[in-house]
Image 1 (tube, one colour):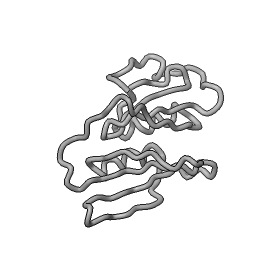
Image 2 (cartoon, one colour):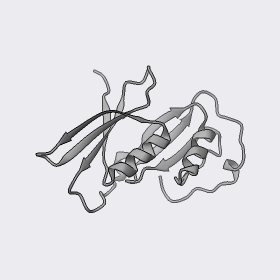
Image 3 (tube, one colour):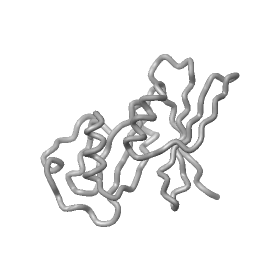
Length: 140
């Protein structure tokens, strides 16, 4: 058995692609389904040891936001520098909901409210500002 992908439904495909692009994922495959009126976009980290993808499903006629179930949990990515990733996301307008105060873990949400966990590769980084002093915001 081999893990393939996680699928999330998105209401605004371009906003989702911008968010995941800033996060560091890139599009590897896309298919348009005119009869079913939906588009599938597969994103990858591009790391040679990481074959898994995130599948964005955009239903063309979806006008209302999708409801988010807490039972979904989150997508998790291991990163080389959790502080640098959080700074890049903030610079792009993404709110860091759970800052990496411990130098190890942070949470953000996609434009469709999907929770994304960022985990520092290896040992935690030394505590650093502004992260140490930042409070949690909302839920993740």
